[in-house]
Image 1 (cartoon, rainbow, N blue to C red):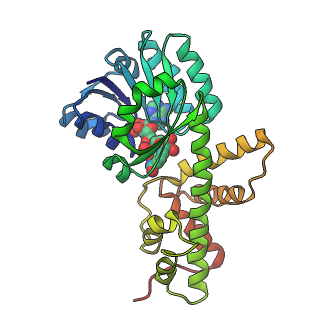
Image 2: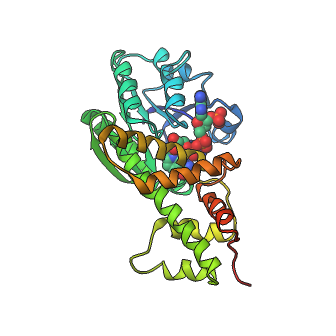
Image 3: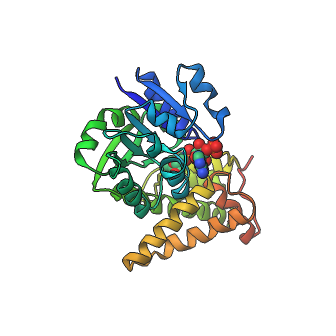
Length: 297
Ligand SMILES: NC(=O)c1ccc[n+]([C@@H]2O[C@H](COP(=O)([O-])OP(=O)(O)OC[C@H]3O[C@@H](n4cnc5c(N)ncnc54)[C@H](OP(=O)(O)O)[C@@H]3O)[C@@H](O)[C@H]2O)c1
């Protein structure tokens, strides 16, 4: 059993750290907003006073925070993981961040004798609770091998993508598909409504055949119920598509569909909907079409 540290107890971090605790590992946690640790502490986790304190108490530290700035802050900032680290510590950053920031953090970790993996995930909080995430890993192979049993506790599909930054690169590619697919599903529901169809018919027919997508399967029923409770926020999807577009710029690749999807997400954010689920983009399209998607009685 390992001494595990977990930093970032948001929608994903809470169920993920809980699975590690329930597997019998000793777990020390820290979250900027302390309240979110309540359930884990009640279940037997210890509270670290800071990210630094978590690192001091652990052999392997996981971080699961919003974006590049947050990862840099909790790992490299004052009172961060690297200040509390010692040579031999393993750091696994599971946040979805920019690949160049993963590589930069990994280099700073390495200078302190800390081996780092970038290991972002795919799958919603429910899949996190069930240990069925997809996990994309970049970094040293031997560190990956050492962490594999822990990844198997968290995920059903684990893909080693290559050296440092390749896990976060694969994550951008994955979310490019997801962001565009959610936008396409929302467009289909808006068009169907305006054309006189029951949107339920769209959900049913696209459950078979070539138009089948996970986006419609998981988000379609929530969109037609107008349930935008966040599973994966519009702000986080905007962040991922923006990072993918920056990578595309560097690589000289055009991403026309991703660009448009990002613009609709930007509009959702401007309308104050950033904290809602990313499928809230449907409401932006509804306003453009002057219609409201709703199920027939
Ligand atoms: N939700 C999903 O379905 C999903 C799926 C795959 C990947 N992801 C990725 O997983 C990561 C976490 O997502 P989430 O859905 O769990 O987001 P979330 O619920 O918004 O949680 C974000 C976490 O980051 C912490 N945080 C943000 N900025 C910070 C800072 N400057 N310093 C310290 N802590 C900071 C937050 O602390 P507070 O509690 O104090 O705000 C919170 O613990 C993101 O990179 C996201 O893109 C999410």
